[in-house]
Amino acid sequence: MSRDFTYSGSPAHIVFGEGKSDTAGEWVEKLGCSRALVLSTPQQKVDAEALAERLGPLAVGVFAGAVMHTPVDVTEAAMKVVAETKADCVVSLGGGSTTGLGKAIAYRTNLPQIVIPTTYAGSEVTPILGQTEGGRKTTVRHASILPEVVIYDPALTTGLPVGMSVTSGLNAMAHAVEALYAQDRNPISTLMAVEGLRAFKASLPDIIKTPQLLDLRADALYGAWLCGTVLGTVGMALHHKICHTLGGTFDTPHADTHAIMLPHTAAYNAVAVPELLAPVAGIFGGSVGGGLWDFAKQIGAPLALKDLGLT
Image (cartoon, rainbow, N blue to C red; front, side, top):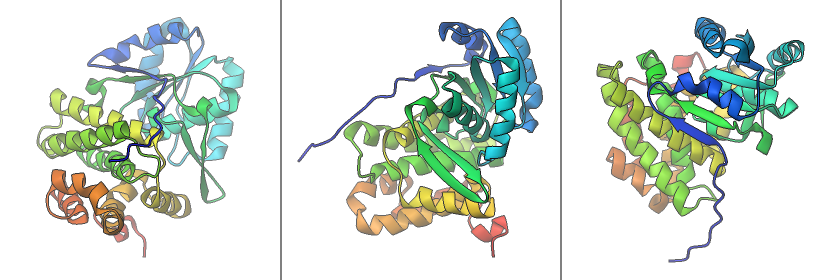
């Protein structure tokens, strides 16, 4: 078997474990910083303010205006706060929307980032930024976009609503599925992708029944880290481009769009590369697309774009 590949590991620091979000201040100092701006969505403002309080004199403020698809005008509003507070790093608390804003700031300023994810988005471990302006979503890849420190604390995800856990998990799984047939895949990215899919297959159905169980949340967060890491390591293809186009054009919810499209894009690509997508059928049973669709239905995910209001 021919083994030609290139592998570049991520330089990010990954901190994983219950209660580890309490170490955010230590990481601000390890990065040589002392003026952290805490970022969140409006919905998580109270949590962001509590985090800023725990950071004490290391925090210079909170910007709680992050929204989906990282609109450029929101980033510009945040940039004013960065300038006013003389922030020397950002601490992003939340899901993909908040992480996206932190990355957008870092891309423009090269400020260090600490991300504390509360969903399974996975974008916290990628050097990729998606931004929206004038109804168009564009992506850029740059070393400055990759967060320096990611703190995975399963205790922060027990409050993630079941519906959001499901769509967020399927969004993460989409990264792994596309990594299996990426042109620049390598043995390590494939191992991580398969392990990530297994982690979600084992955890998501039980999270629906017992969302507060920490071990299940830890398994799902572990899967999110693996799936996000492959997203940052190899190129994405048809599935992600379709979801970006739908999200950027129609403002459809990011995770829901991924959840709905995944069985269909995987089935389409399985015709061309059945051997590369065989692990998906092995994990979920049946055919590639059928197995993913059955799993999505089992865990109560949205199954059609019309459910999002598209005609």
